[in-house]
Length: 491
Image (cartoon, rainbow, N blue to C red; front, side, top):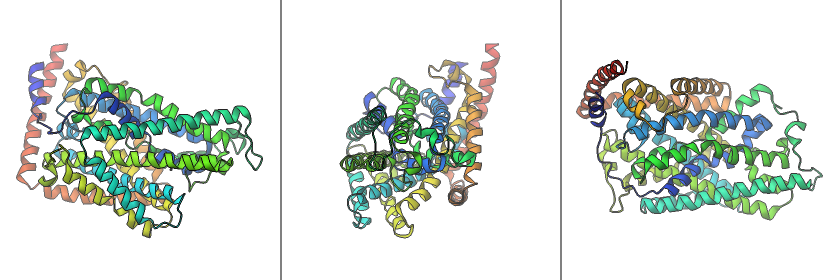
C-alpha cells in the first residue's frame, strides 16, 4: 500500500534544472538573513511608538506562531525532494489553482518587499546625504542587486553568508553595548540614564493600552517576512535533509537573540517614547546618547542589512517566477536558464519591477509613509502565503498519512498547531481592519486578489491548465482511496 501511495505522490516529480550548490553554512545564514531584515532595523521604530515596551511580547507571539508555519513547511518539503519551492508542494497538494494563486502572490510579496527595502536603503543614504535625489541611490541599488544575482548560485550564497555575518555581528555588538551602558549607568547629554526601569517607568509596559499593543503587530509581522525564504532554496540545497531542519529549528533562538534582545537593549538605553518612529531605532539609540560617529557606523551596518534582505528577495522572486514558468503559470520565457544556470529573464523582470520604488518616493511623501504603505500590503500577502502552507499541511496529513508517519521532521503539535496558526492569522487580518493606514493596504490586497482571480479564470481556459486540473483531480481521488486503505491496514 505504501508503494502505491509513493507512486501517486512521485508522479509530480520533474527535473528542476537548478543546481544543488548551496551548502549547509549558506542555508543557515540565508535563513538568518531572511529572518532579520528591514522590518526590524527600520520598522521597529514605528512598532515601538505604537506598542511601547510591549513590542517585546508582540515579537515573541509572532515568532512562536511562525515557528509552526516553518515546521509545517519543512515537513512538506522533505516529504518529496522534487519540490523546488514551497509553491510546488502547494500546487501538488492543493491543486493547480491554489498553486497559481500562491506562486504569483509570493512573487508579488517580494516585489513589494523589495520595493520597501530599496526605499529604506534610500532613507539610510539620506542619513549622510539628505539632499541627494532619491532616484540615484535607488537605481544604483537595483543595478547592484542584478549584478550580484546574475552570478552563480554559489556566489549568491557567499554574498548572503557575509551579509548575514555583518547583521549578526552588529546585533550582538548592540546588545553587548546596551548591557554595558545599563551596568555602567550611562548618562546621555540630556541627563537620561540607561536603566532597565525604562520598560515600565514611561507609562507602563503597555503604555498605549490593548489597542496600541494590537496595532504593533502590523509592522512587527513585516519584520518576519522572508522567514520562509529557505523554502525557495530547496532545489539548490546540497543536503536538504540536514540543512533545512537545522535552519528551521534555530528560529526560536534567533527570535530571542536578534529581535527581543536587540529591542530590549535599545529601550533600556533610550526610553521608548523618545525613539523617533521615522528613523531606525538602532541609529537613534547612538544618536541620542551623543555617539554620532557610532550612529554613522550603525547606519552603514543597517544599510548593508537592508541590501542583504533585498538581495535575498530578488533571489527568491526570480526562483518563484522560474517555478511558475516551469509549471505553465507564467510565460515560458522565464523558464530559461543562463549558462551559469541562473533564471536570468526572471531576474531581469524582478529588478525592473523594483524601479517602482522611485515612483512611490516621488508621490508618497516621506520615506516612512512610503515604507508603511508597501509593508502593509506585503504583510497581508505574506500572511496569505503562510496560511496556504498550513492548509497544505492539513491536506497532506489527510491524503498522505504514510508520508507523515515516516517523516523524521514532523511538525510539533500537528493539526492542533495548524488550526492555531489559522486562527491567529484570521485575528491579524481583523486587527489590520482597525487602522486607517493598514485598512488601505488591505483594500489594495483585495483588489489584487480579484485581479489575480480574473487572470486565473482566463488561465483555466488553456489546455495546459485544464490537463493539470484533470490530472490533479484524478490523483487526489486515488490518494484518498489509498490513504483510507493505508489507515485500514494500520488498524
